[in-house]
Image (cartoon, rainbow, N blue to C red):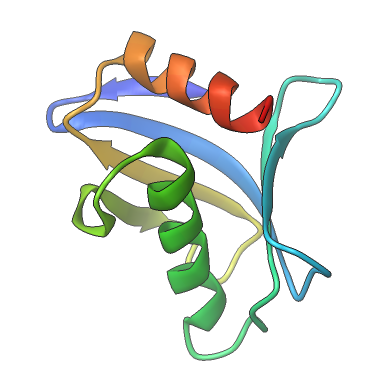
Length: 97
């Protein structure tokens, strides 16, 4: 799910830490999932999620911020400077590569 925000857009993701590899993908239901190899301890996995999203979406790390879900699998991340349409296009491209 992507929703507008005054600074850009908010993206809802389901996160999984301690995975075999880093990846960004959509499930059959359309939900956005992110898996990172970092362990879920002391914010390492959250930092890895931010870095992975920035890298795959062609953003600076400072343009991606965790809004909620610091200790939960369901997370809301702010993508600064993007429209809903641009974010959707970048996410689709990242998931299909």
